[in-house]
Image 1 (tube, rainbow, N blue to C red):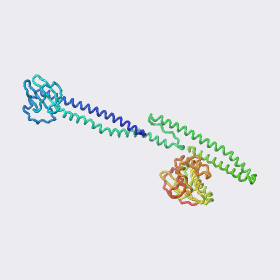
Image 2: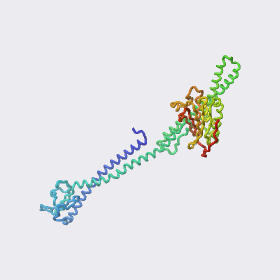
Image 3: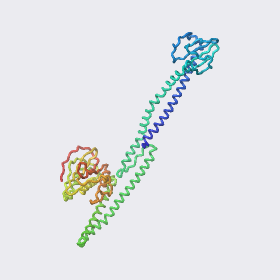
Image 4: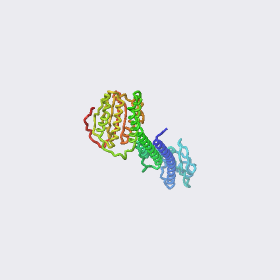
Length: 449
């Protein structure tokens, strides 16, 4: 079953044109045969008329047998009262003298002949032609009419394929635009200049995009409002817990500290929700600046350095390149810091974390490489899902990578996460942003902390 609309159209139109071409060819073949037979009959009549008008006397009286080409017509002239022909072009042929006037068919010397008989008061004229020669001539002429169709049919198939491909090119462009639609790109499809048949389809997609954008905006606003409203009571709980700390009996201190940790985790989760809502929000109203990515990487390493040193980790940034992006600096900093913080969180004590920058086409990438336990390959497609945690034993909200992905999409970038491929365990987390302008990748001094 052909599922491609293009192939279906090419096949349908090609078969339709082929059927029409075959019917036209058969019709032309039959009409040509009929026309040639009529033309050959007219030739016999014309020869008979010329013989009647005096040409009969010019025929030889005693022609030699077999001197006439078999493709030529044979002429016989009879005179009243004579048993032998008065004139003939081939004395070896004896046509019936009493043949009916007009056209008839007879067998002479084991050959079938087409004879035209003309009765005149002073003579009887017979002009004949071999039926095999007539068939040969008509078939040759009719076959000539089939050559154009045989040549044109393949060209028509090619033309149909090109026309269909060109006609569906706009659908392919629309398909590419639809594939690019995501939470960071909810622009409606263009409707100017589209074919009438596609317009309802595009209108339906644009309506769906509007509903999706509205739903996402409502979700974002709800998350932001809920997180904002929850900050106040959590702050109050934190203050009350701080005030109660001196009055807690020593036997209840352990449970009280668990309560304070729970309040702190809730506060961090609310802060992450607020960051996710801001990352999902359009960047139209935020002022953009020229952000130096090497400085962002340095700042991210400096922020997590105390935790890394306390756990005996070796963290450093190498292979820095001079690259800038047009963005909100806090967004870029948050995305890079989340990747570095994730590496610190999942890397065991005494581990190593390396940061690299590289250029790849129009994107500049920041790679965060750790030597932690890695992630099960089956779980990798879900790492950017909200609230998903690959290792439940490690403390976290499951929103960090979702925020990173939202920020990358907001500025036309990308983010990937994969296991190391150098034979060692660990994760390679990479985030790329479009470079604001092309510059030479001058290596900056390496930084090891």
